[in-house]
Image (cartoon, rainbow, N blue to C red; front, side):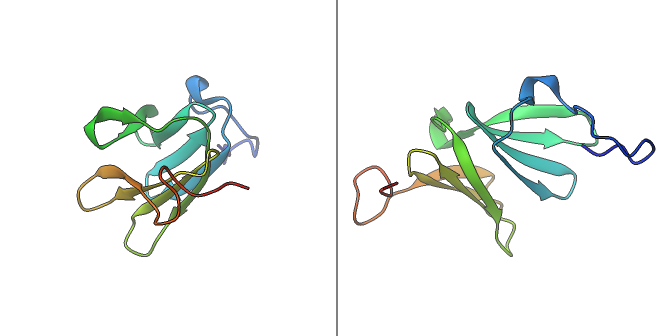
Length: 107
């Protein structure tokens, strides 16, 4: 995070030292890592790992994050899977495609 006083970048949460992608959402930063998805709360300097519905882990690297106009978060994984964080229900669901049993073809 940029320290406004010194103009230097500083570590905000040591457990999240390797971010692959990030998306800012108000006072939160969504962070995709090689170990899944995290939501960092800037006001409380805390982070939580996020899980899909039923406590299912988001497997592997989270490689893409994008908020849509309704504040839903679209989540892409390195394995080609797509998840959606539904802002209304606060749930993450795996989106199955018509073409592939477990996700999109990464190739």
